[in-house]
Image (cartoon, rainbow, N blue to C red; front, side, top):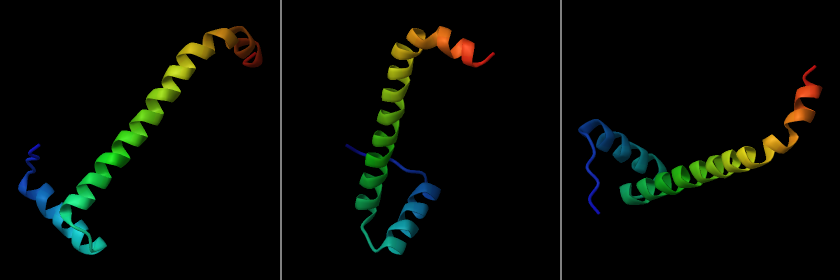
Length: 65
C-alpha cells in the first residue's frame, strides 16, 4: 500500500512523530486504528438503535408528552 500525503500533511505527521518520539509509520498506523475503532463503534450503535428503537417507539412517544 502506498499512502500519498500532501506536503502539509507530511510535515504535520513528521512534527507529531518527533513530538511523540515515534516513527511516522507508527503514528499513522495508530491514527488508522483509532479511526476504524471509533467508526466501528458508531456503526454498531446506529445498528442497535435502528433495530431496537422501533420496539420502544410508543413508550418513547409517551415519555415525551
